[in-house]
Amino acid sequence: MSEASAAGTGENLAQLGTLRSQKARSLWSDAFRQFRHHKLAMGGAILLLFFILMVIFGPVLYSGEVRGIDFGVGYENPSLEYPMGTTHEGHDIFARVMWGGRISLAVGVAAMAVAIAIGTTIGAISGYFGGFVDSALMRFTDLFISLPVLPLLLLIIYLFRDTMRNTFGILLGNFILIVVVIGALAWMPVARLVRASFLSLKEKEYVEAAHCIGAKTSSVMLRHIMPNVMSPIIVAATLAVAQAIITESTLSFLGLGFPPDVPTWGRMLNDASDYVAIHPVMVIFPGLAIFLTVLSINFVGDGLRDALDPHRTV
Amino acid sequence: MSRYLVRRLLVAIPTLVAISLVIFTILALAPGDPLSDLALNPAVPPEVQQRLRESMGLEDPVPVRYARWATSLAQGDFGYSFQTRSPVSDLLVQRLPITLAVLGSAYVLAILIAIPVGVISSVKQYSIFDNVATTTAFIGFSLPTFFTGLLFIMLFSVKFGDWGLPTLPSVYRSTVDGEGLAGVWDRLQMMIMPITVLGLFQAAILTRYTRAAMLETIHMDYVRTARAKGLSSRVVVFRHALRNALIPVITIIALGIPTIFTGAVVTEQIFRIPGIGALLITSIQNNDTPVVMAITFIFSILVVVFNLVADILYGVLDPRIKYE
Image: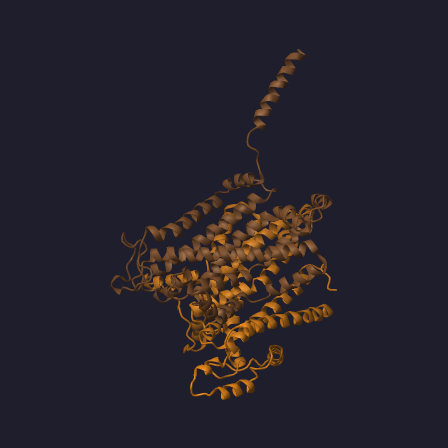
């Protein structure tokens, strides 16, 4: 009797053993499982992936007229030859939307990187060291929060545009200027977020343990605390991309982003604003491109927020 | 309360000084200055240029120039526009009222939409209303104002005409000749679209925050207590839950002021409203530095003022917040 039950337990243990030998679930795979259940976020991710592939490979596969002016084929409505129609000057809108997407997405990602880098550095230093450093850095952050972003962006771009163009060339100079300025005016929420996480995490036992085994300050900050701050940073980064894309489009729409012959989405809408009544496709397609990109990024950010939060299960 | 107000005002002054320093530094670091065009003019010999620069104080060290600029700024003297040769303050006085009218009405519209919708959404969480409202808000703040503005013109000014419906004017005209009520109506019509575009965008952001803040307070113990002692649900929702939820919402409203200025610049551009945002764009295109700097600074002042208003409102909403 007892032998049989012992054998039974042994079998159960063996079964358990086979179960355990399956792949371990890490935080990231857990997060991905959560994310997959978020329908809108998955939809956003798929749409976004489609847009990214389209702007990378689209211009290679589809060759439409982006810059050259040909009034003979102007004002075309969408057809097989021109999937999104043509502009008043005979540019192929589909080709332009794909070119513009390259710039918009590149600006969005690069400006996000700048904002996250500045914000994380300032927030980490502020939260970890506390005291005078913290209050000084937080005053600095508060100052940046009360700066009027758009007028300052316009002012800086207007003042430094020519120098940057002369040093780095027209496209690259403009790109660096816009990315740096958008990033430098968007890091404040990230800094506050990272500071708050550092403030609470630096008191945890595992950080104390790291100190005890003689870890250097830099390694405590980067190896022990930083990985635990990654989830809010990732969410903030996603939303920062969307924000940067809107900011860049606004600048281009106001005519102060890239030079006029570079077809960014905002610039295309600027050109279109005089043709709203006569040729609506000029407004609709670039506008939809901005809208759908930003919407899908926001959905992805929302899904990530839920997926990376251990307190929530979908 | 009044002591707190004085103290907060005193704190606002260093902020404004710091902002003015940032703006001035940017300008000082920038290449070129108002007289650099003269260098290209062969009719003006270098010595004359030098003397001109000295007489205008351009050769002074940066701190001296900053001190001079800041003192005149503090006295309300923004200098003269390069383009129109008139005092910048005159231009601002002409342009500011219409911008503030559009911004103010848009913000009021946004609050009137966002707070009721956010409250109903949170009270009836996961209902059809909540789902529709949340999704609409999500779509709303992913739609940039310059796109919605153009879509509104396309729909209400162009398509409505094609369908034989009354249309809204797409472009602002300052020369409205209608008299009395007809004139007022003409003016109102021109403001409807800019205010709606701006207001709906802001409403989308605010709805999300109102809903989130309400969802947090509505599950609090004191709300349950209020229900348990038999208060009507209207009183519980508005007096107990909403009042506490409004604190984070007020913060977002105050912090949203810079965003709505951005929106103002864009809508003034689309609908050709002769406000301060349109002035900013034309001044940048004309290299009219004094006007650009003055507008940037005015926007900063407004941001600081609204943060102050938010701080004061906290105390009105939550008596636990002490002004010490």
